[in-house]
Image (spheres, one colour):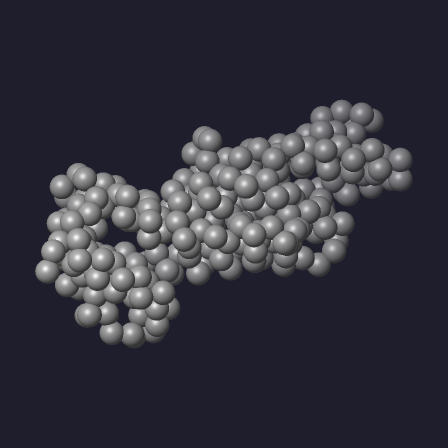
Length: 255
């Protein structure tokens, strides 16, 4: 049998296996695919192959684009969870091929290809909307409306899984948007409360606000991020009380 014929048969078998990846995760026998993986090692270019394998799974945008707000965020996190499970399964499925080609430096690992595919095909289009959905949730909580905190925790975890908290990462981008939104929110609070409360009551109001913010933001942000956000509390300084509000902020932030 020619190499091309073996390649075609191997690809067909692998495609069937990939379509049954969920069954494999549940214990579906995968031994029939091992010889196909071995043959492919010598017949195709690994990096291109992995992209061909991964890209069809990226056709999620039309489905996600039908959603908005918190429903979009919830569905995105569900898709991301399923995608991670699928990648974990495929990494085991193609372990031999992945290991050999990585050792030979003919390609990057499958996990990195999968992550890059998801970032380039899904995140680039949806990230601004996801951040807006998260900011909406935070705004609703600040208005004392009930929210699903697991969505904020899920988005924060997703960002950290895709680059960590370094400069220029998803987490850093979200932090910047949250800082801007928080500054506007605190400024609005200050304007409203100064008209409604005495100086003493205003101070108590600010203290309760910042204490509440610290506890809630700590549920899904790094301590350094929480500290930056609480620093925006200095915008609520009461002109009639000098630096007293700033002192409250420093006490709450632990500075």
